[in-house]
Image (cartoon, rainbow, N blue to C red; front, top):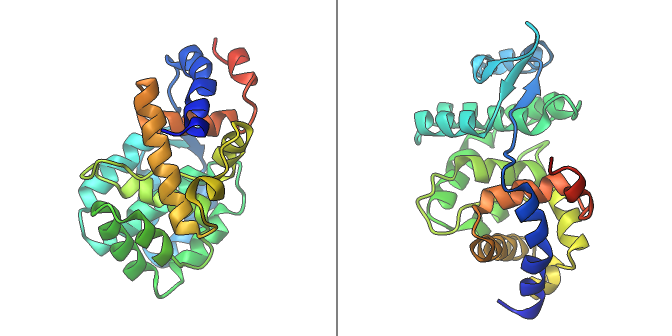
Length: 232
């Protein structure tokens, strides 16, 4: 671990210690908003996954639900499509109003099924750079396709895929870690792999799970001091 990376771990330590008892909550979504986008593509059954929400028109879906869907899907292309849709719902919640539209665009992409199968296999084999490079689907950018990588990863390799979205990026930048400097290149697949490896290194140094540390960075969204105020 170089000096910059070591400095990130030390700057994170107070936040980790203050929030070690906290866990990511399930995400609220509204099935009726998603159903018109999903039914024409035969994937609306995923709207029954998760648990009942606070009202009859709402449901909750969490990482454990994505993992269950992944295990049920195996390598079946139809099952992987269900996992993908669940990931899009989970990543959108009720805050990203464009999520249903982007998901519909992806479902209409004739390359989707092949891309899902191919990138899932690459993730299972630990080739995250190739998975990143080959994920090209209408309506889906890095923030969501890295969620797909994280959800479909079955922990069969040493370094599990992690999410890299704008909120995580803000925290990394606030901590002084710049992906292209750490990677020594502006090549995005390499930068993503460098990020994943750095996160696993920091998690080991801080004695936490990498996916939990990723969530904490997401939760902070660049506001490092605020973590102490949210630790109750």
